[in-house]
Length: 384
Image (cartoon, rainbow, N blue to C red; front, side, top):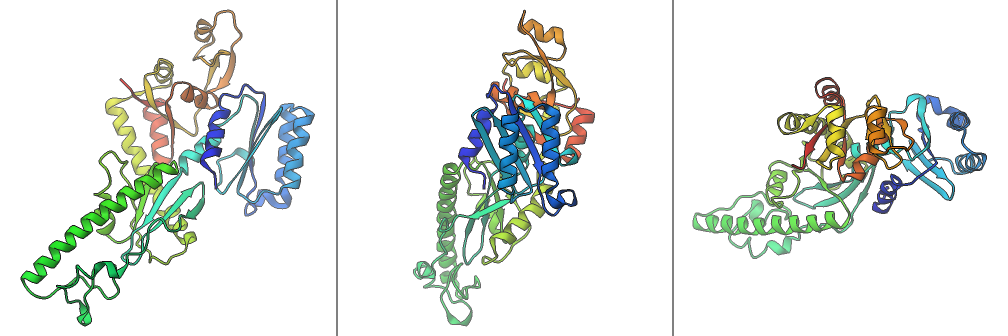
């Protein structure tokens, strides 16, 4: 699983001066194009075409031959005194199963993957037991002990006035609880005390969850479980907490982590696409669009959220300092007397976004098509 330290290392690569080999290689054994480790031949061919120095060529090839990828995609950054390898359990949209650059680090495909499969906390809400998982880039880990099972003994003082099925006193989470109590004032008193306990319980769990997410660098929350339990818990999250995704599935509390991952990967993408469409509507009302305008405002430090499609076309002209212009003359105005280079906009965006502290978000599907068709290919939300 990609760690927070690795994410920081990837982000720091943006500032590496290069030259660096950036190699994205499909290694998914389930794909026919990778039969017989055909990815090795693709890697050799690409490195030769790019003119990668022999020392780096040999270093990368040796790692590919000796350390067989156990993942769908392998990402390699290699240069003098540099070799970073990331194995991802997700497929990237690579042309012919490979994408490579020699020069400044090419991070866009990896940032695309991190954006599409960002680190998420998944909470399974169940009367028997609450469970917390961390999901990132097609991998899942259960955070054991993050939520304890609700102990039936804790409900004894609340259940004195209640008579559940079979003549037992019980509360939510206790075996046999059916949520009924007999008697007039006793029932009202029990319901009131239960409501107070539930309120405290949700607030305590929400506070604990926020602390865990903060400590692990997780910003997005996914809730799954019976309705209305998930919605009730969501209502107790802090006001400034990002709105969680609530999945329709309500699996049993003893379901495996692998099944949880399958549900998340099946049910979350449509909700993500819906959120992206809403983001475009927000930009239409309060943001800016069009490559020229967005790049200009970005370099003025005015954009805090930069929205881009994966299929971003076009080039810019870049100064040694990193400033870019849409035409060569505009770039030269930023760096008189210095040499400017023509680079793809797709390559330039991560460095620009980091330089001006803007969050870079990629959109997909219908949102990507609309961004290209209606917003000129690039859009953003302003700081002021």
